[in-house]
Length: 239
Picture 1 (cartoon, rainbow, N blue to C red):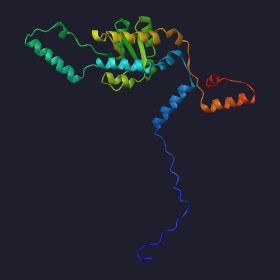
Picture 2 (cartoon, one colour; picture 1 turned 180 degrees about the vertical axis):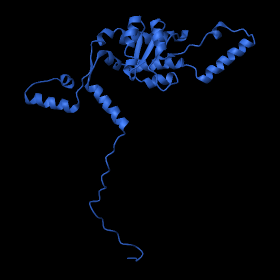
Picture 3 (spheres, one colour; picture 1 turned 45 degrees about the horizontal axis):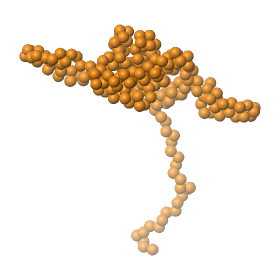
Picture 4 (cartoon, rainbow, N blue to C red; picture 1 turned 30 degrees about the horizontal axis):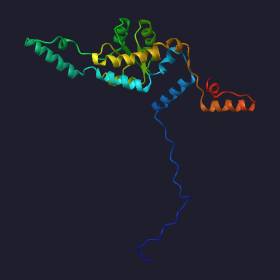
């Protein structure tokens, strides 16, 4: 054996890596998860529980495609449009009535939307399902139904916010659309009436929440088995 080569060192111990320290999630993550579990366990009044019934994925995709066609102007676009209008007016150029009209955009802002609903000027109201505090939008389905305005509940206030250049938006509304989009809007409105307006009386009697955890369900199943009772899985899952 060459003197320059060192002999292999003997292995010590079991050869296993030391156990890693348990990972502690940040406090805001723990609070988010605890809040979700708490909402599942507690019984939720119908007025709040109805916000968990959201629009199906295909119709929601169709709706957001329509909303993105009518995104509001950014500050730069609005400044450019008003500047061009002022320049044309200063030069006394003739303008078509079509150009002189204000562009059609999605409406947003809670007070503005409520005013449109009360005046029956909104063609469709879109409400976010995860608005916090919930008191901001909990009255909107009842108000829309009273005024005869179609409404839908969709997943994600953040998704609504991207439509209007904001981080989040509690509610948006369509007031008017172009003639080529009338048919698409009518399809969405009919789906909104079938899934929300027509089912309002049914949903206002249904409580939400009250869902047991896995450990509690297993314990009740063992008790029922020991006593010789037959209990359905649906009844075990509810408080």
